[in-house]
Image (cartoon, rainbow, N blue to C red; front, side, top):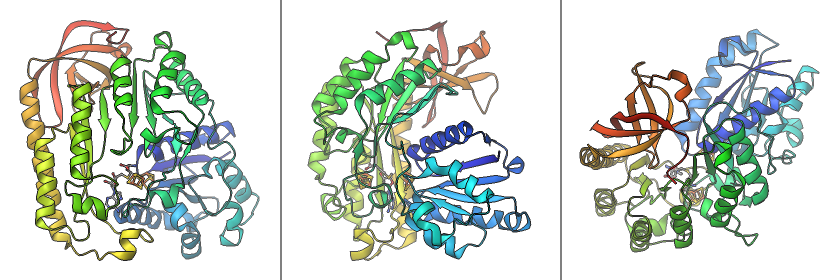
Length: 459
Ligand code: SAH
Ligand code: SF4
Ligand code: F3S
């Protein structure tokens, strides 16, 4: 039995994979520990989306090198996207790294740990077995018995991989093509999570609106099936899904969100740029006008829906005029949030191969900070306009900044801080009515209006 500490980098998909890896390890009799100093095995679940993400993993591996070299019983490994992209090379270059498991192999963790304990080498000569290029873990696309869930939020992958080929993106390389899981399995997994205590479940997919496109089904049909299978009696009060691609999001889907009371009216629909010229170079498959039309369609069906976006600044060839088009989109689109990234060329991607990274870093930084300031002022304006409005918040727990306050999120995914409930911990996972008293760009400060928790969602 090993004491394994898992460290996760990257997106929610990676967080979910870490959760599944932890469950697999526990099933095999290992202990998953929160405290790294108590562990005899450390595994980094890695991200490759930007160079910075990879550098952080490399520096953490370097930090642990003395410990690994001093203690022959200590194991150091990586899984996830960077392991998939460069695992073989890393195993060769880093003598202190014991194993690398690709994005579709991490369920093999117990097997790898056992082999290492038996003195077996899992260095590159065995890469076919344990390296990133090997076969998929059995069960990776199948349902997982998620009976031991902790906390009120659960995540379920509905598809893996991505069939798009945005020119800057490493995800299709490291996660492979789109594979949708069968709807019945997903619905059963959501139900199991809810029965194990999850109150809010988020469905994950790189391009979730394309769910089921190879199998003649759709995300709308999936949401309806989940709504039936995991009825309110399971305790599930909210369902979310990410990430929406502007090309694939349909009116039918938005209408389904409107019709199903428990599905949050929140869309994460990354624009990436506000300039049609840059969108074409990014191979996003839509123009600025088409993106604006999708925004209008969502607001036509669900006027109060919140919409979040991602942006890349400093893409090759991005002129000041292109940037200003992005800026104007953020000024006018009323996003609840914008996640802003500086372009980072990824090895082997079309943009890295064919376009010069010609926007200087200092200019990328300027555009990044400027766009952040625009989104912050949008948030500040919205926050000020929300004072006095009431929201239903899913109570998550005690605020990390103030033990007398609690936090939770609204359906629109806005963070609320509100006065601690008299019921204490029993409040976790309940829906609470609050009224906004003041707001900062990212947080609404509220008071509870009725003091009573509601068990049911809005319908
Ligand atoms: N599947 C999602 C996004 C996955 S990656 C989608 O299609 O929208 C998350 C975000 O990282 C992207 O939306 C993009 O804004 C950013 N990103 C991806 N590749 C990047 C790169 N090479 N440099 C900078 N940011 C990048
Ligand atoms: Fe990457 Fe584009 Fe796929 Fe998103 S849709 S994961 S940005 S290739
Ligand atoms: Fe996620 Fe990073 Fe991989 S964003 S899909 S962990 S490259």
